[in-house]
Length: 87
Image (cartoon, rainbow, N blue to C red; front, side, top):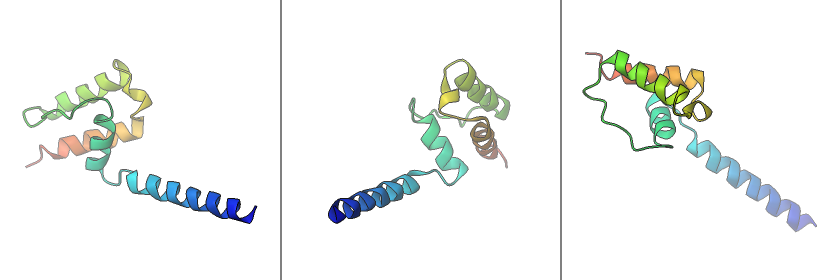
């Protein structure tokens, strides 16, 4: 019985460590993780900032990405994408 408890605890620790390592920590990582969950990342270098906002809105409200990208995360992603255009 004790071995089962130790093995279970070890598996929980390993799963927690794996989860913690996979959590996006920066806006760039958040963008890459959330957006690539459904499709290849687009080349946004030629997009204007307002287009990027529209793209995120479209993905969330028309394409079902609201289940993957929450409102707060969407704002972080938009901020990151806009920062790519800052001089």
